[in-house]
Amino acid sequence: MPNMKNAKKAVKTIAKRKVSNNDFKASMKTAIKNVEKAIASKDKVKAQEALQVAIKKIDKACAAGVITANYVARNKSRLTIKVNSME
Image (tube, rainbow, N blue to C red; front, side):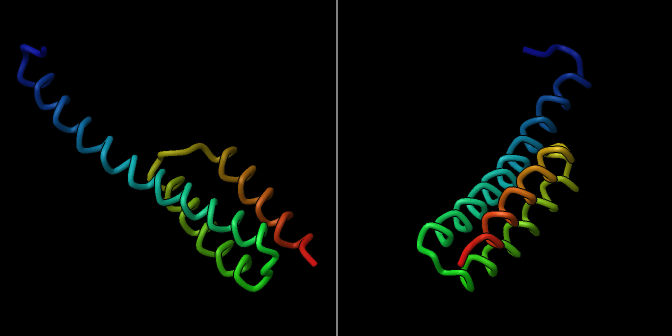
């Protein structure tokens, strides 16, 4: 348990940041799963729409500092390749 005033405040701000970061991460992962579901159902139009949403969510999570730039590039690339290779 923190004793100093600044440590007590840090506990509060860390808790707020954790909630925000979890929201970014959860919405991003859901968007990625929606793209993969659309790919599995072989619906190219739906997959392309879901891909646009996923890319936006991934970029927002990166801007918030929740994920790294390498993670962003890797996931965007993988999803785009999967959608473009659909028939």
